[in-house]
Image 1 (cartoon, rainbow, N blue to C red):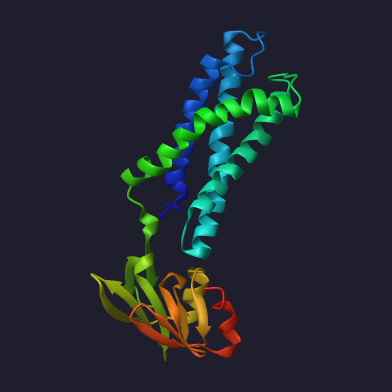
Image 2 (image 1 turned 135 degrees about the vertical axis):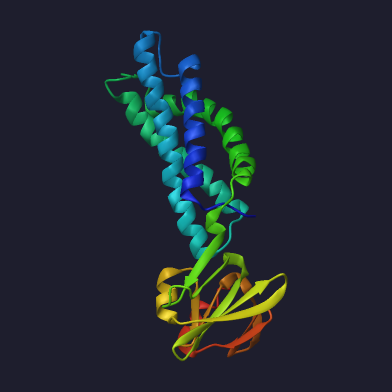
Length: 245
């Protein structure tokens, strides 16, 4: 399962759901309790929509961090995204509900059962469709990574999933990557330490080698790992980082 980790792109989803929240709040008036005029209800609806947008964007930051560390996304993580979103959204909107602006009188249980559950049932399909289809229409710049050398023209731009590993080669590093299903390499003047600081999803398995964990295939023996079309030695001091793969 793929996910677009771009905060910028998810901010668009958050904004669209926030606009929906304003329309929903203005016409359905879940907080109103029959005591607000139109002008005040516009203010309340704006706050309601901001809570949706803010909650979605905040959880998107956690989504990006997790995706960068794991280099993958699955259904459990997707479900966790929704759970965290609604927990944060409930917290923000309940504080807003109790504020002087809304002056609500439901306790937390009543608020969740009478308001949040209804909103969840209506909002979830909208977020699902937005995450599944709208983001596909937006080119994801963050699918690519740029590995820069010390020289201005010394760089390599590839998709993250194409990178297999990076090996030290004296004052250079050798980058192994897939292109059109063929193994390719490129030398740039840089260091493993510099690259690892810039791309923290890479795992060090040897003082001379970094790997993209998504290309790990198997252990050849106790001191060698098999990646996509590449085999590399593993130092004892780094072996524990690989045992969970």
